[in-house]
Length: 338
Image 1 (spheres, rainbow, N blue to C red):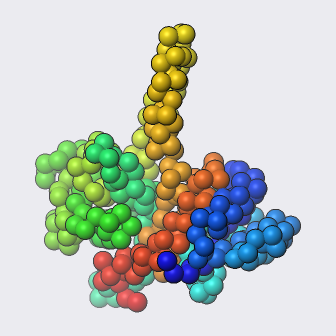
Image 2 (tube, rainbow, N blue to C red; image 1 turned 90 degrees about the vertical axis):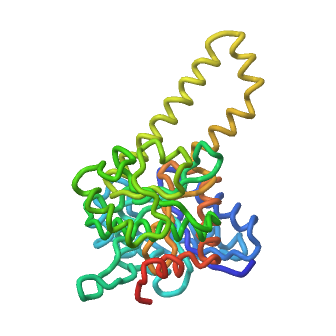
């Protein structure tokens, strides 16, 4: 395991900074070759870094909150932890950045400061649209990559092709899937299904995406029939939130059912470990967050209501992605200019 340095936003998310700092401490303990640049207000990060080896403070007096307009905040709060964290990646001070703060703000700052790769399009070099990507548990016991999960609500068909190429590179590099099967999200598996937009994407995907398996349906996000599900950010975000909502409903109903009588309470004791395992799998804490593909550095965005475990795993995920050369593999998949 090689040494790697990552930056972590100490004040992002809904939880107090103490939760994030405990997660960073856990990551440092788990990875002896990890160094962390901790971004946040002086009174938060300096005492922590003084008490922990391999941690260095990045003083960021400004804080971007969940209530701030993402783009306006990135432009105005130039000394925020999110902006300075992304600038640290651009300057080579860190291989990647983890934040549980505003998804919109991290996406905007990542695009502005870490900067996307460029590809040849219409005779000129154009920046790639960064794609928000994560791996969700599927019914076959593996993981299915979903992209884009919300970074780009309005896109062109060629953007979706690049999302597919990036998602496949992520599946290979991070998940170890040598030849990922890629599906285009539609309302049916037949080639003629979908709206005008997905029908325009289909022939481009077939020509330019290795492993393209045709259209797939919403159920395939968790079926395991394909390894990568690709769509525009509008559809992807709806799919993701629908899955999250269904998971919460299921856990709520299971809990209510098990607590309804003495007999079911006794049954709950027998299934306690299984239920805890199911809850952990659905929570997403094990993966730490979603990665913003297409940038010249690793950027991982955690859930706002994060936990110590999620911060730990998000920090380690940034380090692992940097070690595995994810950024370079993604650029190679699109034929991007380095």
